[in-house]
Image (tube, rainbow, N blue to C red; front, side):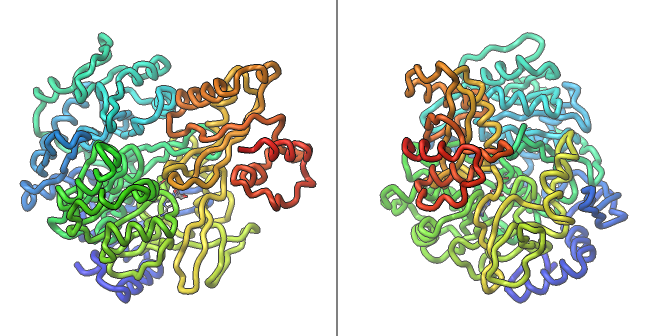
Length: 635
Ligand code: PRX
């Protein structure tokens, strides 16, 4: 059917106009012709951003795994669904066919059932990037359990907070994980975390590293013997369109992480439709996204989007720098990857190294390059374009969020002309708006404002687990009848969007979304610390790095500063994970505050960026003298 695969710019505009003028007809056609439904919907969509309440394909019944697996079996049963590329290049890659994946998902699902998991239960998955991660995700979906994948770089405390927030009763983990030259004991992290999770009755453990671990009697079980006994048939649980498919936590600018809840039908339709066009996937292509399935990019564009299209998707366990800086390109050449999707931070890190690491490999299979997670700077864009794409493969700079479920603004390769650093045009069905600070929409071109979306799209998150009010407050209260993204953006003369970065207290470090509040909370728990403030500052590779301004308690000043810095970072690692460690820590006598007691982060940001020539108006500060003292000692 023609409108599923967009061939030229004229067709894009035509479909875009249709998606805005007749959204119901447009999405109904997509849903009808490209998916397998157990029962048709009665209502294409219903929405009210003032509540907010959004429903897509209400009344429909389906199971997403029947769309990702079963329906492909007649024609694609022997086709490779997953290529697993292990951390160690000496270990053989695995090719898992659709037939095999179907069987393994069913077995896994049967094991979950035998452990008492049923529809609606929450299951926490804390696994490295091995096939079992994708299989566990699909197994939950098979039986209607809600998966909550926690990135296996999070600490035991961060894991525990996520397990408790959505009340998981079962955890799936591994003995350990391989990350470059390191081996991590994941099970030990789980054991520590579970000390504060009373609701978890069962832990299923996948064997990966073979390291020594402790198994707790009555709670922990190796999964392999259970899988061996399980049947390869498992009837899919028939789900309502709006039944939750998964919860995925993302950082907020305040307080605890937000468990974004995604639906079954809308999420499936949107991730599949965006995947098909934004990566220009054609039958027999080999697609590789280097993200971790612990993030939304992995959910939507390693697992669900590709598999819903019957694609071959690569799961890579390792890191770009092991055994050397050529690993990505070695893997591209080895598996003849056609679409390669990564983060700007990885591109910047590799661009610093010799081109010999690239030129050694035949990259001629590449047709489309993608980036995601943070703005890509011009230099990195050109390096990627020249050296990886050989000026021959369009770069799709895809802007989206955990909350949006799928890609929102992006070029369509071979259709939309690209410009470095621009995410270009909204995807079909997406209606962006730029807003001024007073809440008015800024019309026309060559303008800049706060990026909102004014009409629902099928994959938008439906709520925050257990806190619908926070969902409203965070995303729908700033601008009436709009979803507020938290990002700033500009629109150029031809209507292309360029994302300028966060306008709230979320900082994106190496493509990871970090809220300032949880990091500050972790620091403040240190016995010598009285208060702290975190800001981001520009960093060549990470995009942003973290700068912490810390006030010590009385007596704390006498302690060795270097030790204190180390302890503060250890504290952050324990509470959140190593990704949130600070690059710079400055001990300060006070923090610049407004008369109402709010920290003026704008000033701290300038100090961290070494841009103190014009600090703007500081007359409203309660303690202007502190600014000078901070500048004097700044690093
Ligand atoms: O600030 C934007 C940035 O990443 C944020 C979303 O982070 P997260 O929920 O972790 O999802 C990341 C992967 C989808 C956004 O609010 N961001 C994401 N993609 C881009 C981007 N900033 C600029 N350009 C992008 N292509």
